[in-house]
Image (tube, rainbow over all chains, first blue to last red):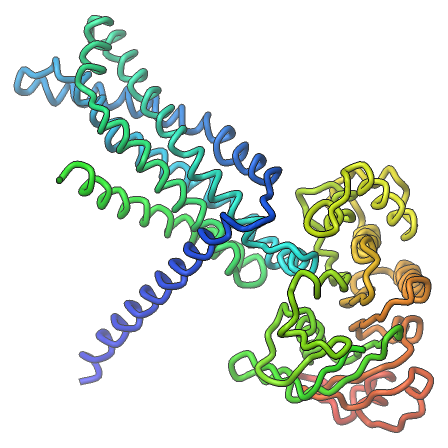
Length: 261
Length: 248
């Protein structure tokens, strides 16, 4: 009998733990939202966060997008050739990059680069008592650390997604016109004629949501880090896992909202 | 006056504070001694609200710490953390002037920098340290910067968490002297936790011994050596035998 109940108990415990974690994250997100509108506003910290989250992420986003766009062009061309539909490369790349790959790849790259860095930094601050020091200096850690980073994520990631979309399409354009013998003008015309405003809007909206998720996860796991190097490592790993999973889940839901209705 | 009345705090099954009663008179220097893991830091952090006690009351000049308006309450305190707790991303002078650059005590940037340099000089550091990052400083210098930060806004009450831990004996002596001088000079109320008996004799007006979650003895530092209290005797003489188990 125990052989049957033990796995069920483990499953139940894991489910309860997951729900409890989701609850804690939701409370943290709500609290962050409330603190956005509270004084004082730390504009210098917001500027630093924008630099770290947005500007310094540009190279990794650009490189990811250009290679993905190029690979996508090759794949669609090869796949399309099976039923004489090679000409659809610009349209499919445009829709694929803007609706899905652009936001998702940027979101995942940000989870890898920014979420991990935020979690490690704040977790180190936690274990070295810097967070306690902030409190004793009458500075609310959520307002000083979390709010600027989350705002930077919400502001910068849609811009990065936009840049990623353009660079991805540029990558496919270079491959298509350079090696697949597409006409340059026709390729660009087909790309932009096919895209709708809704595609672009959904891409940027996904970017804003993914930016909020990525930065919130970094801050949440950092703030709740356990002690020692192991605690910092676990917080960093947990933040990236949670951010990546939540970004993919949010992408599924947002795609449903934007394109199934 | 700071008063802790029957303060209790547990972490799971670990009952760290089991009814701490302690009074620290205004303008005096109280040092809490006790072994590692006996709850000294928890007691200190409970006063600041960094740890919430399970029960009991903490008052500062008759005001319940739990009910006080946080910013105004914390503005009365300065704290030197065990590891310094300096903000890695900020240069030394911005660490020292942190409270003076934001919130209710905000000053113009230049004025805040001048005050920071003055406080650095007060703890024996040259102005050229001001623009360095904390990671570029030695442990003793970091402690001094932490001390400068603690006194930057001229608080009424200063807490020192293990101020000499990790320092060589000479640097420990320097820090102890600085703490004593600054506390006397500012007329501040001081609460220090340490297990360094040299610090105790250099800093304390009064001493309290915390063990098994309660204050085992408290009194003037001059009475400490003749108190005849077995826990205190064993601790100050560093004996392995006695009521305190060597392996905890």
